[in-house]
Length: 73
Image 1 (cartoon, rainbow, N blue to C red):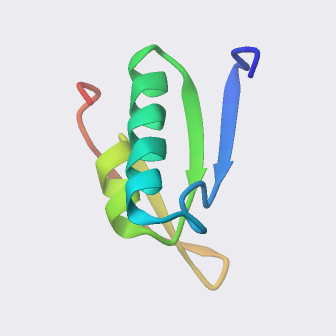
Image 2: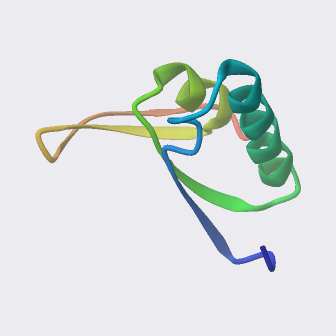
């Protein structure tokens, strides 16, 4: 809203139809491209893979995996 240092997004597409979800995904991508740091929490693996440069998977409250994607995204 006022360009915070950190944007927290908890299931930002969870209750949206497909088209609106794509709009939110595009907005998050644009913000990230502008340098915005985003912490995205989601169950939507496709959303995480399309938006994230780093993902951390949790299972039963413990880190179960981590992956990094090039910073060119």
